[in-house]
Length: 71
Image 1: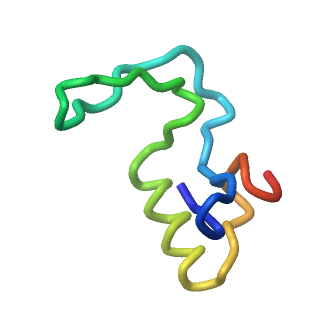
Image 2: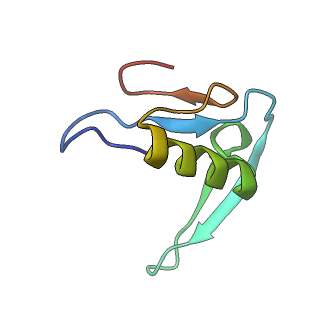
């Protein structure tokens, strides 16, 4: 998830082929959230996208994202 600044809407990577939902991770409070599979990506894809963003200042053309000012 990428925030432009405090209070901005966040951009996040998406899997346009993701369907259904999966259990998330357990929070310190014991709460376990459920996330739409569309809103999760394979770890290697996330690493690729973040590395490219850090080096180039923009998402790579081969990933999808939503939120923020585009996507």
